[in-house]
Image 1: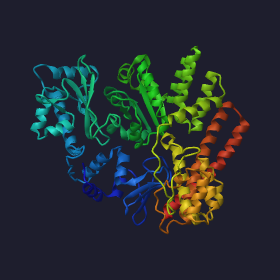
Image 2: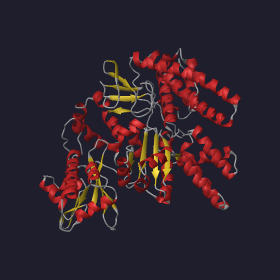
Image 3: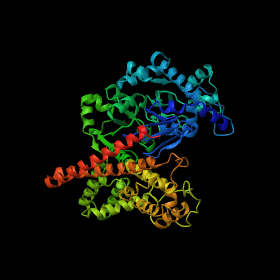
Image 4: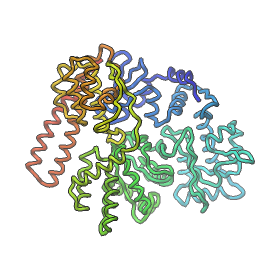
Length: 625
C-alpha cells in the first residue's frame, strides 16, 4: 500500500508540463495555461488544456480529464499504483510500500530482476555447452525456424535450463526470494524456491519503453504446454501488452498502420523481413486494452494477419466485436493453405507478404460475408440464428450510420428483408448488449446552481452508453454536454449566440430540447432553469452536471461561450461532410450525374463553413486566455 504522503511526494516532484511535453507540443497562452493537440484522439485544433498551476488537464474534444496520475494511467495504459510507480521511477524516487495492502517489490526491482534473467538466458543460449546438450538443441530448434545467432542476439532470445539454475544465479546477484517470485521467475514449494521455466527457449517480453516485463517460453520438444507465459503481475498483463511494440511503435506512427500477428516467431519473422510495424498478441485474443495501447501511436489502420486455418478465421469474429472501440479502420488478411506468417514468409518471401498486406480486406465485411455464406441453403431455424448473430456483430456500429448502411443492405439482400427491418434488428441487438447494469450517476447539482434531488424513477429514453459509441460520436456528445452545462451556469455569456444554438444540429435530440428550455429561462434563477430543463427530460440534471470546468471565475465570458458553440457546430458539420462524402462515393459508383453535382455543391459549402469555424477555434486557442 502506498501512503497519501508518498503519492503527494511523487506528484509534487513531477513537472506536469514537461511530462505532457514528451508527446504533445504545448503552447503557453497565459501564465501556467498550456494548450496543445490532444494525445488521446485525432484533432486538428488545439483543444487539450493543461492548467499547470492546478495540476489538471482537460480536453474539450474528447472529454479526457484528470490530474497527473490520471494522465499517466491513460497515456501508458496503467492502473493507479503502476502509474504512481512510473512517475516515481521518472522522478528517481524510491517508494516505500507498506506490507498491509496488495503490495510487493517496487517496479524497478522487478524489472531489474527480469533484465538480469534475460541476460542469463541469452548467455546460456549463445555461449554454453552443457553436458546434456540441451542448449545446443535449443540453438538447433531456433536455426530450423530461421532464428539463428544474429537474430537471437537482436531479439535477446535465450534458453532456460531450469532446476534451480536461474534462481541460484539471481540470488547471487542480490535478488531476494520475494523479488524473484514477484517477477514470476521462481515459485516456492515444499523443497524451497524452484525455477518457473525449464528446458524452454525464452522470448523476453518488453513494454513500449523497452523494459523487460515478462517472458514467453517455448518447449523444444513435444511437451505440453507448448508455450508458457509469465503470469500477470503488477507490471505486465497479457491482455494489455503486445510483443515487439517497443520495436514497432516508430514504424506504426510513421506509416499509420499496425499489423497484428498471433505469436512471437511470427512477429520476429515479420520484422526480419522488413515489415517493422508488426506486433503480436500474447496468448489471448485482441482486446479493447490492446486497442487503447495502440491508440497512443495513432494508427489509421489495424490489420489482423490471420492464420489460414479455421481457428484464424474464427479469431476474426472476436476482433470485429471491438469495431466500436477504435477510430482506426479494422482490416484483415487471411493467409492461404493454413500457413502462419513465419511459414508464409519462408515459402513466398517478403514481397509476397507485402502484396498480401496491401490487399487487406475490411474486417467487418470479411466476417459478414463469411456468415452470410453459411446462411445459403441452411434451414429456416439455422438462418434465423445466423441473422441474429450477424445483427449482434453489427450492433457496435449502431451509432455509425454511414458505416452501417452498406452492411445492413447486404444482410437485407441475403435474407430477403427490407433494410429498415435489418436496422431495427441491429438496434435491438445493440439495446440488448447495453442492458448490463450501470451505476446511477452521482451528479446532483448544476455547476453554479442549486442542489437538486435525483428523480425517483428514470422515465423516458435512458442516457446513451458512451463506451459503446464510436469515437467521433462520443466526442460530439461530450462537447454538447459541455456547452449545455455552461449555458445552464452562465447563460448571460450566450446572449449573442442564442440564435446559433437554436440552429445547431444536435447529435442527441434531447440536447436540443434542453438547450431551448435553458434559453427560454435565461433570465430566471439557476433553480428555475434546472426545473425547466428537467421538465423536458428527466435526465437533464445528469447531463448538465457532466462537467468539471471551473466557471466561477470571471474569465468565463462571451469569448469562451462562442468557442464552445464553435466546437459543437464544427463537429456537427464535420459529421455532415463525412455523410456527404459517403453519399458522393455511392453516387459516383452508380453514375448518377445530377446527384453527384448536388452533393459536390453541398460538400463545397460545408467545407467553406468548416474552414471558417476552424479558423475561429484556432484564433481562440492562439489568443484566448
